[in-house]
Length: 141
Length: 202
Image (tube, one colour):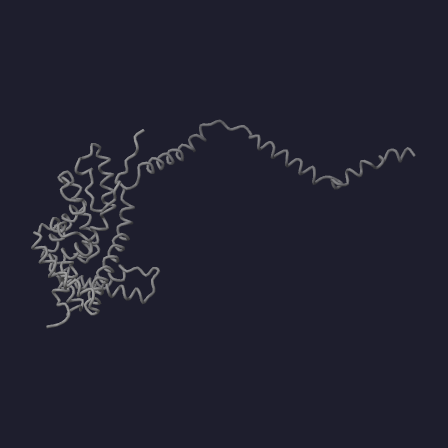
């Protein structure tokens, strides 16, 4: 008779239906223990891989299920469509808008820039020129 | 203001959900609840059917059938068993019906060899593991996958429910309609056959 667990005893150990003696042997015998661990490890790897695969396969399908999309998203999308569709109508119906204050200030700024660029002297020299005598006084002399 | 009750305060996969047992007044709420049931149990049902029929497309189709059947018969569910067991019973019946359809057997045999080869590489992701570790995982999965292939339909069902779905013997008995004694015999034979096929013989 073999000193190790038989195939049936091993199967009972794997199912958790072994007697206490079989369990004791299964834990303490290196060979039987290695066999049981190898079986358990393969089964748990299979379980993990199958779980992972199924979750990956299930995710895209569940995401694209129409009923899983919340109503708030549909409502927001509807509002956006209505707003976008109403913009051209609104523009068409409104009278021509008055020039915006911002436009005015832009024009003033452009005038100032043009004036600055058309100066005969640099701005820093203008202060100096104020101190110099006017050309008419020279003529008086 | 009433505190908003979470849909599933307890996300235990084998919990009996109150909505089916008590019945909800609002159909919308019921459908929303069923969505959650689908989100939670779809992967479970899918992987059980996949490991049973060993064909991705068929597995997805049968899973959809299962949830459609579950949705239609939701009013008949009284909460005597968990939702998980209830859904698995539907899945087991659906798989049985498919497997016993003899007209499809020829095509299934033709397809299986090509499916089995490609399924392994698809199932095991290569993200974050070394090629050696991936090879080892594929070998282990392939060993179990190949071993379950040769089991009878009933043995494979009980084996998968016990070892892949971690269901108890009583839950499996409810899902399959087998008596506990008969179930234990099938389970024992399945484990012995799988071990033998995997080369773990004495």
